[in-house]
Image (tube, rainbow, N blue to C red):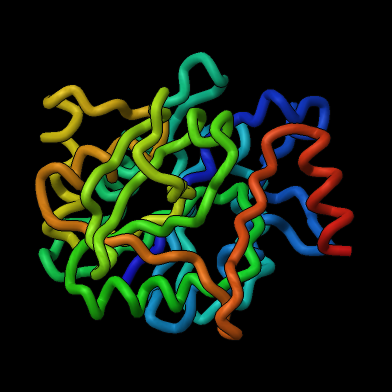
Length: 251
């Protein structure tokens, strides 16, 4: 099983911290943000593929030399050099596949995550959920503020956690389950990215592909939860203020 980490953004809202340094490698409680993610993926993941841009690739290469994960780490450079010319998250997934795969096996599992979030739950639990369902899956959590609902993807699910609707930034949300950037795809689904783009799927946000796919094949949603049964949280670091709050929380 592979884990694709999307880390090719430029985080312009975090300048000057990220003007010459990648956001995923900023530290929270003396640990890079990226490690907060990778420490939770579990031992089913045998290869970690990190997609960087050209500007920051050396930082990731240097970081990788210090890691001791059981899974191998591959750093790929998508060639972009500034925010205006970035490929976009969905195209970066395809780029990682093209660089690292001779062929995609239908039953191979791919955990796809954004590398700039801190989490307090285990992505290994999400992987087990997806394997048990036997379909590509997404994560979700409750979001009850309308303004926040309108800025993210919102889904509805049935009693079996099967997705019944999936909308990006809805003006009138049908539900209150928001979708963070953590996805599980089987090979048979992840290899449809080119089809999705040709069909008009957006490629800047990673969730665009999951939304497109949910209308083509059954998908399920895992509610983020900790081992003790309490709600899991994802801490999005979008600007200097949110970065400060996350640092305070985890200190």
